[in-house]
Image 1 (tube, helix red, strand yellow):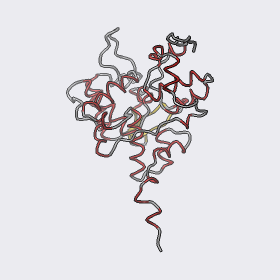
Image 2 (image 1 turned 135 degrees about the vertical axis):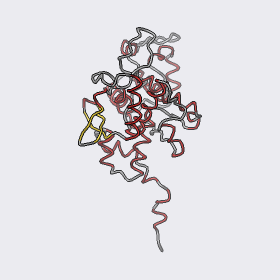
Image 3 (image 1 turned 60 degrees about the horizontal axis):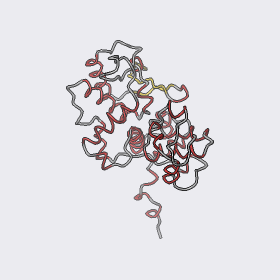
Image 4 (image 1 turned 120 degrees about the horizontal axis):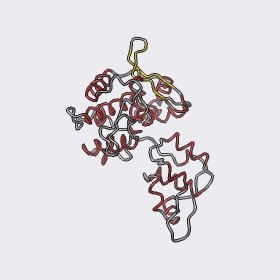
Length: 281
């Protein structure tokens, strides 16, 4: 990215056209591996560490980038990735769904369905937004979600009964349950062209659903780094804590490598199970 001393940096066409604030850790890792410019890598660190959007980078000067990016530019993603934020057990009901979601409005019904889908199925935000009505389907006597994962991979996840009920209520209220090829979750209003048959914006899921209701109950202040991925991480950790096989959780999450799934396995970190208490003399 070109910049001159004392002037605001001019974003490249890549940064003008793409907002990368919604990417998850695996996508950031892939981006980081192909970026060769140290300055662009530093900007990517800013987006991730400080929550900046690519559209906001143009307001930064080179000195801003250097001062906020502590230390040399890392050689790999693993040296600067942050651990996933896990909701404490007492706060999990926030997403099942939040009692602050009004059940008598279309937006409330949609948001309840989104939160329940995220919490019970640990989907990535992009996976949630790409769901079509026809992706809710019967398989082997159970309702499944047909999830479009990364690199074109498809996986089928059994749908939680509570989520089924909430999604059905939302579809009945929205009236697009028979539009099988249309998006499952849609905006409830569009002030630009009034068209609602389109995929919900991933940033809207973060700001207008997850963070909105978290702030409404004070959870955003209690849990640092709360985001859509927090529900995915919480679901994975909760499943493992309750005895789910880690290989099954790997498939459930759509991880290519089980080492990624182990990031959510906190069972080995329980202090009460330390070898200290196994010592006998």
